[in-house]
Amino acid sequence: KTIGVPLEVFPNEYRVACTPDTAKELRKFGFAVTIQHNAGEQAKFPDEMYQRVGCTIVEDPRAIWECDVVLKVRPPMRHPQLGVHEAELLKPNHVLVSFIYPSRDAELVQLLQASRGTVIAMDCVPRITTAQKLDALSSMGGVMGYRAVVEAANFFPRYFTGQMTAAGKVVPAKVLIIGAGVAGLAAIGAAKGLGAIVRAFDVRPTVRDQIESMGGEFLTVNVTEDGNGGGGYAKKMSDRFIEAEHELFGAQAKEVDIIITTAQIPNQRAPILITTPMVQSMKPGSVIVDLASETGGNCQLTQQGETIRTQNGVTIIGAIDLPSRMASQSSQLYSKNMVHMMDECGRGEKFNVDIEKNPITIGCCIIHNGELRWPQCTKMVQ
Ligand code: NAD
Image (cartoon, rainbow, N blue to C red; front, side, top):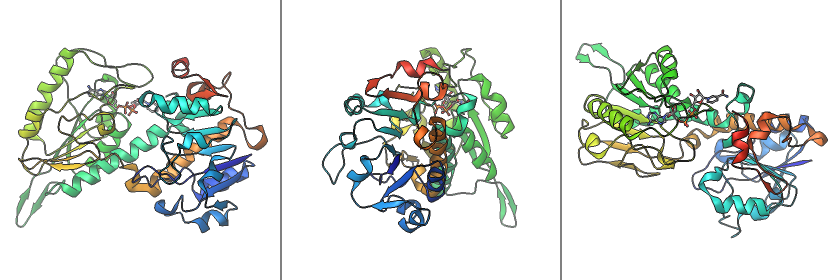
């Protein structure tokens, strides 16, 4: 069987789905690996490194999409140079492994179904213990949380850590993290590491211990409602609860220097948790990093993909390319997730996407031989 790895064509996407190290592993599994020219260049993996581990390099993206298995990062899209949709380049009986986000793009799902192959959506991997090693949402979430702190530090005009210096006392920065899932916890760790005072809030009370064990203070509201929506994800909260959150964050906004928001609900627009008046009440020089920007944003003023400065001097970062800003690291982790996914399906000639016994592939194989399984498949495993 052949594996093909394309150059990502989404703007500013620098990750690659297979590194030279993971290509070597896949070759050991018995696959022939073909990499598109310069696919790893931006992640600092030049063609020669792939050639050295026995990969074939091709110039023409069509040759990649004709492979038996295509490994990719971003969901297929219209190819800017070829003028056709990447999904239309797939050959029948192919297997595509990629982030897909089927709930966001019905047309893509239709095109993929029409390509009469099998599609594994990395964003639909069930949140079960055995799937942790191929959970790409988690590995990318960790990178995003860490990088959010680095980006905030880049714009924040002061130290994070408190200091006693000969020139006087420096007070530590106060950081508020909203949503303490994978990205939020990574952000708590990074901000604590820089010496800030960190507070965090989440609708799932079970994360309290995790926040505290990372050195963060767990904030609460006086409305009781468990936000657990199953599978580790949150549910949409009642208006009353959101109001209580607004009250809490309204008070916090006046006090803290940095807010990092990560609150998401599967298949829905992200909730607005930081309103315009809250931003207006923040101190000049404060920074908001909105990691929910791609699903609409948690801050009312966020502009997707942009960094803006408000009149009162607050920087709001709505970047959607944070994993790409650490492309080597993200590619290394993502491609490892890919190897584990391939191993789950069987090595070399035994390769087969099992939708009967294996809970991992049952949950994330959204199209099987042209047959649409999504969204039911994601509910079959919890
Ligand atoms: P996510 O990106 O979907 O959401 C981020 C966080 O935002 C979540 O913690 C959620 O509770 C929170 N949130 C949603 N609405 C909110 C609101 N109104 N106010 C404040 N916070 C809000 O989630 P994620 O980080 O991908 O994963 C969440 C959890 O899933 C993890 O913390 C973990 O417990 C679980 N998980 C389990 C596994 C596994 O067992 N294999 C793997 C990954 C994650």
